[in-house]
Image (tube, rainbow over all chains, first blue to last red):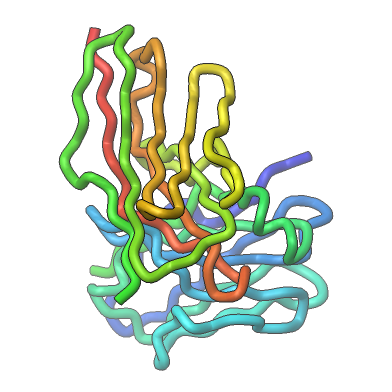
Length: 116
Length: 112
């Protein structure tokens, strides 16, 4: 059973470009969470999704950021018109269903976005 | 405001000693508290969960305590080894159970 898969592991974008980060949850997991980690800072919650639904996006910046988790395929975190301040590690976590966020979260290895 | 605070200074200890890391929180009433380990360039890995009605939880060389009156959790690694060197994160379940909110982590370095 493969773990949470994120790709790419490293992504370099010029200012103004779009960044697309992908997350395939563990098999059987229908809940996906995205976190951002800035250098020397903790993990910051961004968004919680179930298949085809955004449940909690309270940590998402209001502009330029969007997330989806379609019925088929991976969850996508999209950042439009990237700026240098978007440079960070973005982590995805999954759980089988909502109640199991009370047990443990399984994290991917992250995508390190660098905006030049 | 709500805060989860961990020692920002790195903790250096000698191999074989017990490492103790602290997590303090304010303005939360968590039902659960979790500890994770994060190595450089890697995602966090779950270690232990402790519930509000549990005072202590053990797993091999790890021990976690949870004092809801003090709003504090202590994380202990006994007989520490260089391989235990990593950043340790505490996390609370918040937002009606929708998300884990993390502390900034404490870096532990175990020296020979």
